[in-house]
Length: 387
Image 1 (cartoon, rainbow, N blue to C red):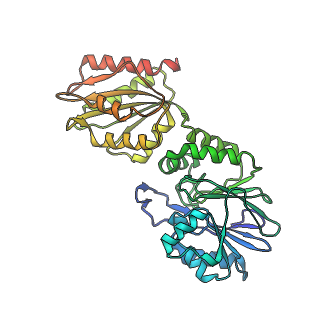
Image 2: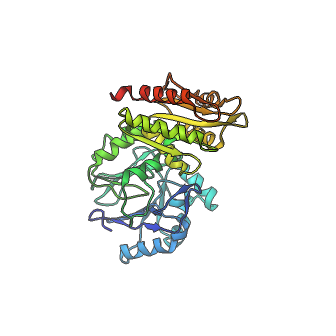
Image 3: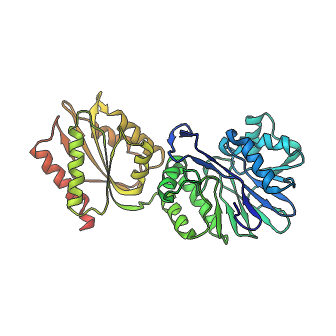
């Protein structure tokens, strides 16, 4: 696949994977992207997952048509991108390895060697000339590993963005970009919003026409759309006005309350209502929705004098990713001594800029008329902004 006249795609699609990073469901597989910049000298941008070494090396050979690469630029040391660094080094013995100092330390840990005699160590503002193409490197620490660099080709105005602007899904599958990019970002990079903001600030000084990420499609039009979403996600703003109702239920009574609330929210004009059963949905999807929507209702049962396990996991996932800037409400249920709301509030106490709804719902075993009135009042309060 030709990106520009001199930049070719040499990555692979993975439809064998079931869980990315051992936890994220990827029904449409994954793409491990690698690129070749062909000039007087040739640079290969990153490698691919270990399972695809032969396919990747074949792609390099076919694309270079008898020529040999001069450089392998390693932007990120996570094994889905770096597993074949040693394989490459053994095949192309004259090629230099270009990476940050921290990346070479990681190479020693992964491969038992840091390729000392072939190192080209780069940092912020360092450059590499291939001939017509001039590459400038920028450090991107903790986006989302400490050794990360990104690379800007000023000749073709291409940003090689490492894991930035990546998404779940192989490239031979048609699907909406935002949904799987959001789930990817929130799940994997979401904790590091401040670091992403710094990288976006660096990128804002560049004339970028194409973004080449390490996962997902090459972006070559409407770049403002993608950059704006990254700004929203990394600054923890709400992308969509609306309410997420996230619930767990043991015998169906809390579920009834959650679904009634969703109905009432729609009735009172909420522009968007999402409902997630945390015991049955993809937890990563639920976490994505929690960051996406402006308001959230936690509905759960007291369990073992605490919070039901799936709700506990959900809130821990949110807090770990710097959950903030939301309106929050609670529905709790308990047949004796309901305490779920107290414990959920405690779990969220260090989250910034949370506004708590005045109305709450406390169910004792099953909904009664008072609970129905409480749910109605809560729905009205959450919809005040949409009247």
